[in-house]
Length: 75
Image (cartoon, rainbow, N blue to C red; front, side, top):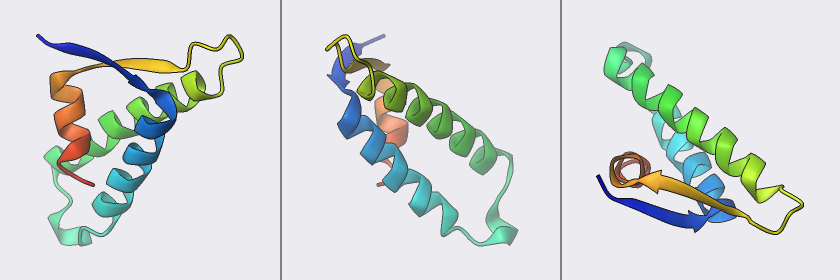
């Protein structure tokens, strides 16, 4: 599995955009897969936001290639 350390603020913005795109899905098309994607991206956004607001200067988040792919498919 591949990992990358990425700027937390950028990942927060990307997750926010991905969630906006997912919100545009019609109610009738919101299945279990949709719900899982949404929850995963919400979790990543929360972690990225916490890292971005970190006071220790280490404002990066490590994502797997699969997590990054999930976000990038929706922005």
